[in-house]
Image 1 (cartoon, rainbow, N blue to C red):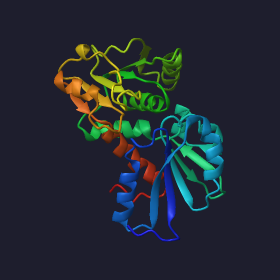
Image 2 (cartoon, rainbow, N blue to C red):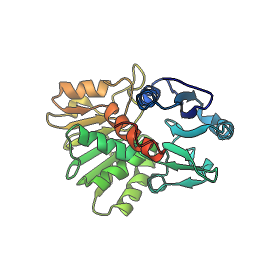
Image 3 (tube, helix red, strand yellow):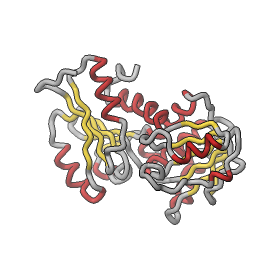
Length: 267
């Protein structure tokens, strides 16, 4: 990959940022496409986002930013405009510079997650789904699963009121989907989704009781690294089909590239 003084810059902002796959994927795609561009990891603590954002937005050759934990919701008030999925989810994972100089955000985690499920051979339509985790990515995934036609969606989160608020929003947007809240019990669900950060760090708890998993269930994780989390290992041992965070990442990366005007990437 040849980088010159005319290179266009893209970045991912998160904390921690060392676990993300984005720089590897984007820079490999830039090289494949022969583009003079680079994608950089930028680690910014949660409390420093507003200050860091003001500086980043003044970099004139910065054309796009990807947001990961914990910034997907915090960035929303810093933007000039939101796309339809970002408005629905109240969270953003990709931001582009508009012609007028303002910055517009959209959310592709949910649609990318569904695309990853389908690429792995699992159609969510008609499934009974349990989702654990209702934060930034979790909100987008819940709306996308409802849009994809799951028969029912059970939501669980350790933060008081978070699952209930999301359930109400999803039910209002997709009244044909039966949405409920409760314990993170995977029994009886065809699809089990981990949308929490559990699995990022060694020693993390497993988000559901592995003893309640059964053969034939589909267990999907959003964690990008490690690709094989303790949850997915336990699910495989229980006879479940598993879908790693890589599937979601690749699905949303292609959608994000198109949003940034780089539709030639990920082909």
